[in-house]
Length: 420
Ligand code: GDP
Ligand code: IMO
Ligand code: MG
Image (tube, rainbow, N blue to C red; front, side):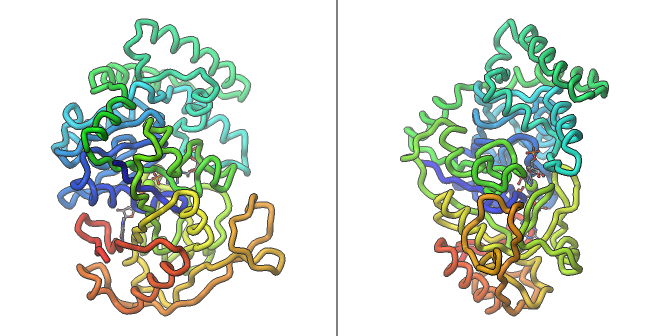
């Protein structure tokens, strides 16, 4: 049986914290897409750690962690992260597994990402520059190298062939940066990767499921960054939605039970692209400050705005969300009134659907106002302790979305979560 946990907005919903909270109830946590563009923040014994490649169940010794075939893997990041988690007592050689079919991010993928963004100029996506797009392009272009290829004696020859191909593309971009130190690091990290548990991920996971083990599939990014359903072209290069779990792990749809969607109590986006509820005023600034909204991977300030129920409804529809987690409710403690986006005004008419191309239409959010709670919710432990205004806010969202909010996260700490 598999439950899925994924972000419903533009990423950074707090997935890492929530996976860490649920992990003791699962035998396996499996990442199914994305790569080191992800930054999932966890607090272990009160200390902060950000995971990019390793699934967020790594700190639970009885939970196995799988890096699935749908992920793109940067061996250099992985190696550094394995060393970092070891300092917290996690032993990746015991509880982490990597699929042979996982594609590798090469140093030249990172260079190509940078070159492509530079060429786009004003229209740049705001990529994390981790090589995600170029690595997935080599996967679908049928050129990429996979983790299982490391076990092949021709690996270095095949690497050089692909590198030459990339060099020609980089020459076209007039990219002249010296990346030889990246290559050195890469080969050292490759040696390290060879020593980890490399498995036939699809057999590995299906055997465990047949034996009755429980899996939580951990999404990266968010539904509005999905390559098919997000705000294209300002998206990432993978399927971040539930459908990605099937191809990203090699599991059948009948195995999926709950789809747990994570949303912030408001909304953020980092990088370029449309964001209908974005606040360009002091309220937006105040949200960024109160929520400490700076990218976990790049440190960039996140754009902030009100919760968008049109986009949230769309994400719930595409994902088949059965339960919701609302994070960062405590960030709204000091704000009143609050606004909730219930529709988009396009050419004087209100729509409740996400348009094909948000950037091509003049859009304004239709907002509904709520009283804030003006209370410190970060100390609440039970539903009864949450102020009535929080319950009203939640009841309205439940009624608009059709899937219930079952947990409210009220702080970054492991135990700051209220089950409703
Ligand atoms: P992810 O990418 O979805 O895992 O989210 P990030 O880790 O990039 O960003 C979420 C940020 O919010 C992190 O700094 C978390 O520590 C923090 N966070 C998570 N849940 C809460 C919450 O309920 N309240 C507050 N104040 N911070 C939270
Ligand atoms: P987590 O898992 C927020 C954004 C980038 C950029 C776009 C494409 O922490 O929620 P890419 O590097 O994939 O080519 O960038 O997607 N992006 C994220 N934004 N959280 C993430 O991951 C993101 N991963 C990518 O900022 O706009
Ligand atoms: Mg993040």
